[in-house]
Image 1 (cartoon, rainbow, N blue to C red):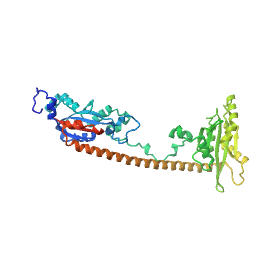
Image 2: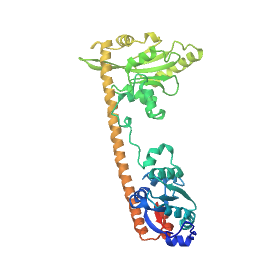
Image 3: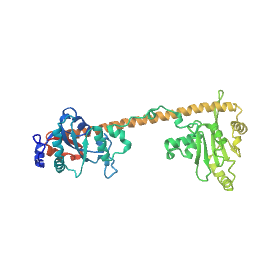
Image 4: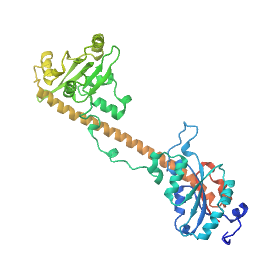
Length: 411
């Protein structure tokens, strides 16, 4: 070919096969990219690349055994046309004049029915076109272009923040639904069990919907009676019939912390329909039995009356409290202590979750490292075999044993 003039006659496929020789061969696209540096600047080359989405994205995870066909591992063949930046223009012209013959020669010798053509002008562009042909999702673009995973965001590395679970706009229950999902929050019975423990966290009050059979959570929180009274004063549930349960705490130096458990029968001021009242009457007995023992029950209380003083007065009236002061101040003291303990509860939860995630991460790293070593061992075996082959034999061997590979040819 190098002796041809402008009016050359095309070589036959047989002559192409005799003229072809291996410039370089390997297993991965990154190896191919490295081979096109330095000496290749003056070359015009034609290549065949057999690869998969897993290889192009450096994905060493196990194929999904539940799928009939693992699309990420499916091999596809690509032809690569490469012209070095310093290649002789006459050589380029001769090369282009034989592309159809070269392509036909390669197709006859590879074991793939279809070969996708890619003009290799830059590694990044070629990678993107190959990934597009392989069906890589756009959301993996950053990983796909460079073969690397996106770096963690600052948010994913942030330290413990209790507002993740409780903030000023949402109760702990609804914040938990946002964070963990509706299927992963505690049931009514589980929240009730937490409330009955003197130091049960994180919830310390709950509102149930009226029911004759089960405890259905309407709302729950970790801000104590202060949060609950504010919520009801804001008329959020002014049109609802609800049954509540609150763990009420007082704290003073002489007694430490003392708890009382308060039931709440709530009829919102805008809840006056016959159906709602019938629902209240029908469910009052069953809800009282399901919620269980309490120090006293607040009933027929207006939203404007839902103040801390109301709870203090009822504790004094209904409970034995001669040995300590029951005041709004001692209630607030207990509230501060409990809020600090709830923060510690969530911090411990986060620490345990982080430790579990770290254990899983290390196990996954070990598994992936083992898989990479196995894959690399198979690749080394193929590299050794291919290094002893001519072009025709190597083309026929590409893709065997489901191993990715490539060959660059010069003529």
